[in-house]
Image (cartoon, rainbow, N blue to C red; front, side, top):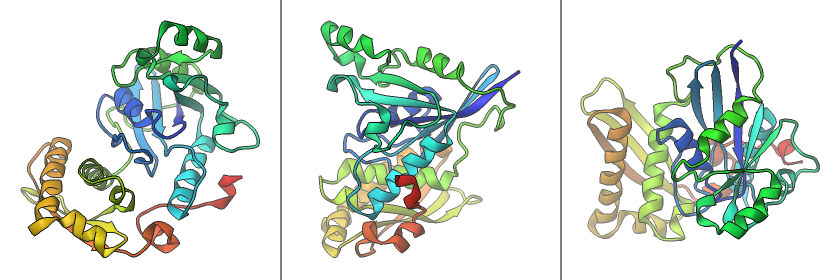
Length: 291
């Protein structure tokens, strides 16, 4: 009998959740940035090996929310914990022994699903630090290099319920190409902008002409203030051209063909604090998941 189920990857910001998902799937699905809070929505990866299929969810980092966007991110992470058949609690080994997952998540009790502790960045710690962490029972991994990841996959696979596959064997995600295009554009903005503006950037794919050659994509980068718009556009449009060119290369790698990326910058005042604006960008806030 085959096994299949949802494996949710959860943990504090910058613990390496997106890098781990990309490593497991063997292809870049989640954007990666040294800036915290870069993952805003859950990203779905599908791994099928022999008679096991894992639907792996990369989630926003667990934190205390300060405004509506962060509340939506927290709600997304908590829904993924609730939906999981197995949970990977990913922790940064360089920070020492982690708190229990439910404490990091601000929950009164642990989630229902079994939890596998994975200690990431284990290649960056000393022998003594590793020995101290062995008592946690966690699996040592290095998502960046792949060390220990196959052992983590086997451990999680053994905990999945018996089930027919939930998706065709050749699929690697259930999310649309539009979603990944928007994420790649936002990732490029994170890479090229300073410390303040990236957190105010959202991307929306407004047009996606699948039959065109090159593939025509029109996307909007939304910011909260006119001053941020001027920063992204840059002198004589230099910055937005740089973002567009770098993003186009990533998108062409994703879709496997030439792309014409038509990129615009728009102001949507205080969108991170607006429930209606968050809904426009596909974010959901469900207060009951915060309990």
